[in-house]
Image (tube, rainbow, N blue to C red; front, side):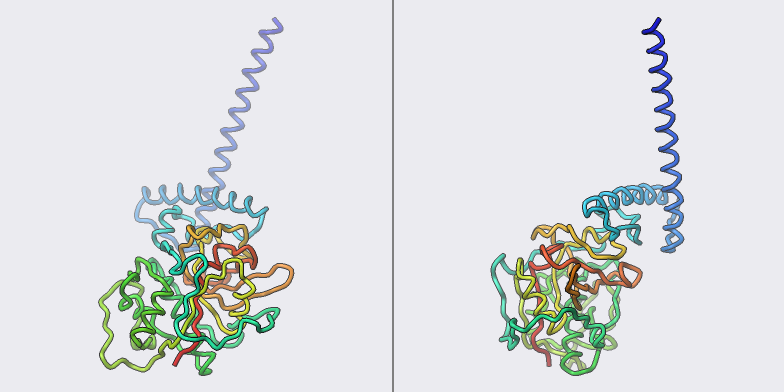
Amino acid sequence: MVVSNILRTSVVVGGVVLILFFLMAITKNNQEQREFEQFIRMFNKSYVNSTERNIRFKRFQASLNNIRLLRHSCNGCSSYGITKFSDLSPEEFTKTHLTPISPRISRTETFNMGKSKRSTTTAMLSNIDWRDKGVVTSVRNQKNCGACWAVSAVEMIESVYAIKTGVLQTFSVQEMIDCSGGINQGCLGGSVAYLLLWLVENNITVLKEENYPTIYADQICTLSQTPDEGVKIKSFLTLNLMNREDLLVTYLSKSPVSVALNALPWQYYVGGIISQCDNSIESLNHAAEIVGYQLGVNPYYILKNSWGTNFGNDGYVYVAIGNNECGIGWEVDVITNVV
């Protein structure tokens, strides 16, 4: 009798647990449906049919799980949340917004193109933001074109040109996409270092945006034999500053620089300072311009990204200084002179 009662009780308890689990699953699904509807409205999303909508909802649910894991890995930080990329799988996001990047120098090599007169012994400033000095152009949106390498290089050129001349000018990213050959493959990816090398060795003029409009798509190069007015790169450095972030900060006190990094976790970046980010050389998949830094209790770099102003901090990303977060020290490109 006692055994029979225990069995009946176990069956009842088991049934209650199953019902509660089922109700919790329904509640969670309903909550995620509501979040998905908010996401659609917030980012003005539209899908061709119910089949695609269901696929996007599944990927949105996977993104919510990835966000929870990222928050857990960084001890509950609030840097990750729902973004305009939350209905993409990581594979889709990588294909449309990232490109595999291998640093064009070895783990210990420094590549010099021209002689730099800069000193890396200058005392560090506690903070610098080149935006405040009027030498940083507006945030771009590369859309589904993997041209971060061209964008970050041109943005660095714009900043260095403005520092030297006092004139902030917008130059053509499309020229770099179309005309820089070799290892560079337009919207399929490229290298900042090889782009700068191509510009220097061939004495190429980087044209103004209005003379070579940017559409973020592969097209035939239309450079003329008598190029319009623009800017030329005379010298640059490609540096491996892994574990030498003091030098990186010193270079930033002179001008913005371009870096290769791992931006896969950025799919879910909503603000704050990114830390606990894979910094291995194998993880590099993006390029961006660093336009400043803030030292102190929670030091960070200010990166100008190329995914539009409705991403991150109005288009900018803050990455923690120290531990070479996101592989930020593996390849640092610095323009030292323009004419």
